[in-house]
Image (cartoon, rainbow, N blue to C red):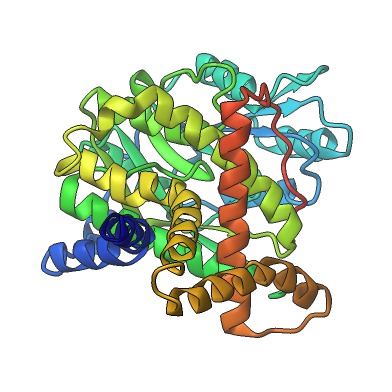
Amino acid sequence: MLLSLYIILVISIAVPLLSYVWFPLFLKLKTASKKEHISSDLAAYNACPPVTIIFSAFNEAAVIERKLQSIIDSDYPKEKLRVLIGSDASTDTTCTIIERFTESYPWITLYKNTQRQGKLNVINDLVDKATTDLLILTDANVFFEPQTVKALVYYLTERKAQQVCANIFKFSPKNAGISGQEIFYMNMENRIKYEESLAYGFVVGVEGGCYGIRKDWFTKVPEGFLMDDFFITLSVVERGGKVLFAPEAVCYEDVNDEPLIEYKRKIRISLGNYRNLAYYKHLLFPFWKGFGLAFLMHKVLRWFTPFALIISFLCCLAISFYVPVFGWLCLLYSLLLILPLLTIILNKASIRLPVVNFAGHFLLMNFALLQGFFKYIFDSGESAWEPPKRNV
């Protein structure tokens, strides 16, 4: 009995360590000699086929002007650009701002819905309207660098990719709250995606804020699949396509600094991830190599980390009846539960304690994963898309 408890404890501790520690180190070693430098090739690239930039907007007055200006400032030939925007029944001045741009730039087109359709339906409709072979899907609050469009197109054409993940840097104008934790986490994600791209020729999930894709590889996402970017990536991988990370396709996105707002967003992401896992679970096999290994280590083990944490606590509690010192570990576990609440309190008071803040944020996001799982189990019909408050 005691041996079994020790084995279960070791396995439950290994789950987060494998995903957050071992796999990033494994990728770093695997790609140590595979770094690429294509700056000169990209600078000389002038083929520039037509490309359509697509995004949905719902009450994005705070960011839409900066978004459109970042596209206009692109070094891509304007005669090869087309921008399709779907306003999902915006009630602020989003449409007024966009229409001001359409008067000066006829290659920008606005489609206005009078009733909410949801982001997925808006994007699906816009893709149907696109007439180019190459598409760039993005979000209203993701701002391009001048070479972003060219870099994405370069990877789609010269590198023969079917889908390309942009290099999205997170920023926080206020540099407050949980922004530091989120920026650290997303920078780590970018590094892992880049190294997956180098090692395997695929990325386990592009970020929906900005990615390029060939139109004939775009898959319409069924209703209810909240994480459309992840669903589309897995569809490309399932069909044998190449999904690359383009470090030169730099763009910027604001992050939330409010723990509870980010908590709510992570619940929604978690729900979508579990739905996608149920649909694409066959891609986990074989789980010891290739995409199966990366999918398991990069994503699935993270999604089950909250369960591993609970199981490890229960094992410590059971072992403490045989080995009293484990009772102190149980007490430590119990104290850790205070950290998410402490993180929220510290955020309200604008107090920064790095170790406490990072640990509390990690646990809070795992609580969100757990809540998202139970929403999935109890068949939550949640599918509406509500953009969080923009931190700009």
